[in-house]
Image 1 (tube, rainbow, N blue to C red):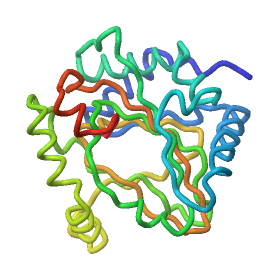
Image 2 (image 1 turned 30 degrees about the vertical axis):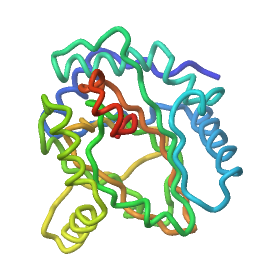
Image 3 (image 1 turned 180 degrees about the horizontal axis):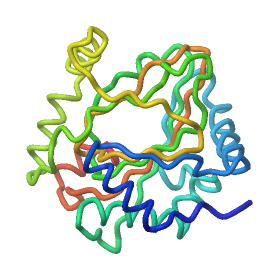
Image 4 (image 1 turned 120 degrees about the horizontal axis):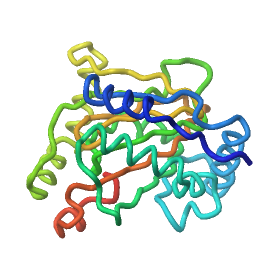
Length: 242
């Protein structure tokens, strides 16, 4: 299998600039067709054990042996994350900074329940890799994004309280209804399998649209740089990446 795409400095600079200007950026066709097929098979293997239900698999060791493990440890992908993060924030992450990976699949009768769950991530940079998307309509399973609606919080406790207020089911339903009725106007991104989508996950309220229960929406999320990594409060109350 071919190595992963090596992104040049100009593209990295463009992605970082778009993140700060509009809150969103993408790199088209990052995976080759062969790599995308391997990614789909990795998720299909996991789905066989889950039946007709949605699931999320978080990081090593659960992604061991998959294309996603090879991607996240590759020099090409590590340079890309580091370059975008450094150019976009002006900060250099700690040498010990790790990428937290989430393999996510929406399918079956609980797909709607796992959608429109608006939240802020626990990490600064989020990279989304779509693997399989519904083909019957571009308006299914889109990324729904309110870009850069808050800054980094200096207090981990304040961040936890703020997330608790926003990320409960009542607040999430209210946001979803306001979007549906046209009172709120988020960015809605059609996701192409094999491409990469970047946003400041900590600063951007986001969710995914529901899919038809018969459709499959599978993605992999890469979370980078936790500003509250040393906080015991955040470590106890917030799962990695959320």
